[in-house]
Image (spheres, rainbow, N blue to C red):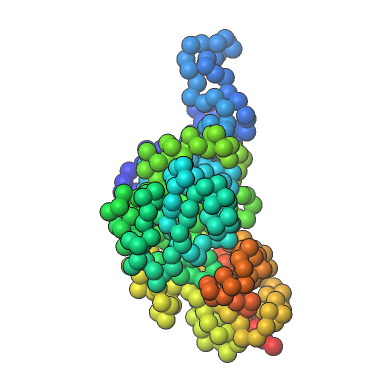
Length: 393
Ligand SMILES: Cc1ncc(COP(=O)(O)O)c(C=O)c1O
């Protein structure tokens, strides 16, 4: 359906990108689970080739089910276009390699997802690229980090798992003054809680494995952004080959129909749990940008329309006790992902950030008893009760 600027986000979640199948009238985008299409000819009703060129050719280069997902995401992010990937990491690696070019240099926030950190601190330098990391206290000194070959700035906010908030407006303004491309991983906020294109992001990346698909049943990624960037990244994707499967696109696009409802409910639940944990004697700190006590609260309130469904809390005691608390939870499951309908808990030092050295974990405040919770859409009272009983000695 044709998008109008004034449509609300919930309406776009349901309708944007959706194609009505002309052959059958199906109101749901069909799953075109095929590798190849008739090309360069069309076909008439008698099965004879015609000279009418078909729009698709080979699924790695494009597929109608995948296209529906791409259009929905770009409508939600308010960007010109989007390109889908087989995973969040495929999206990040392809986009960054394209944007920094040969022997390029990039500035990146320090507190990024562990897999992204392995790419930036390990793989890219091994292939002749350079990445300089900065933390929140260093954003005023970005000038000093610029080099002749600096091509882009990469941001994740709120960060995983310490929920630090970066002022992306300030960072993106700086980047544009210096002709750098601005890249953001918007997996945590989702377009429901933050729309980075309106704050100056050129390229927006998601692990669609998380909130976009929302049901912990796919691995998927996507890059949205200005046309010029998406075209370049799509070209790179078709060569590197990290394309999205049609059935994954179907599940992800279907999940996104309820994105707004799910994210708002997770926001509310996370806020309630953060309040509950803040008062709990066994908890030494709660990291959630919705709390007024959080260092980044004021910036988050300015840039975001919701504080998200992820929070972290530190248990007084030892790692064994933190593990015991997690295992006692009956509703929240102990697992590493996030952004699904179900609540999940994990110790990031064991899972998402296990690649970091002990020193790097310490520097980032990721202790052995720091538990990250991805709060699902269950009833608020049930999750609070579950977390409460798990914390009973
Ligand atoms: C913020 C963030 N970005 C990217 C990724 C990587 O995405 P994927 O696992 O879909 O490759 C993750 C995975 O946990 C993540 O949390």
